[in-house]
Length: 182
Figure: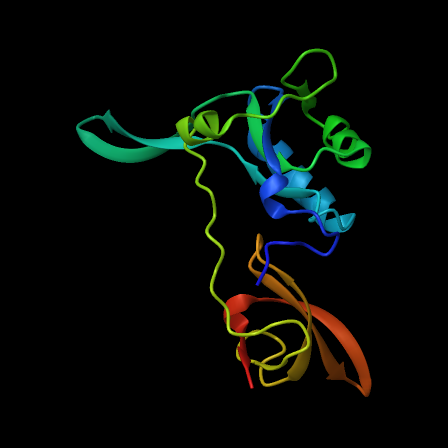
């Protein structure tokens, strides 16, 4: 299997960029971006969105609790292919003040910077099906439906499958662990 997405771009060519946000809006910006990427079908351009955090132990009145705090308040990391459309989408998201870089040109992070920020590269899951295979849905609302694999998205560990519902083929998106090859 190759690491190509449907546009033929190499997934490895995507780079991490730093997006500056209003302080305290990091999670909201991350959620808004994820929704907009899904709604506009841009998951091939904008692959991953991360807000680096760390856990720490807080002691209050003799009680220890584990809490989480943002490593870089005011910043969100985005793994993406820079295109006019992806740049515009991120730049015009509520709470985003801009990309980190000179002027309006985003500068990608180096591999060592990404590792230092604690962003884990996702490993591609091993699967035993390919586009065109007949599968059976094992869990979820379409459990026990049969279908044909149309598209595989390794970055999101999801697969698009045509299932027959009410006498017509319907495209549904499922997670890798919800299907098995027949």
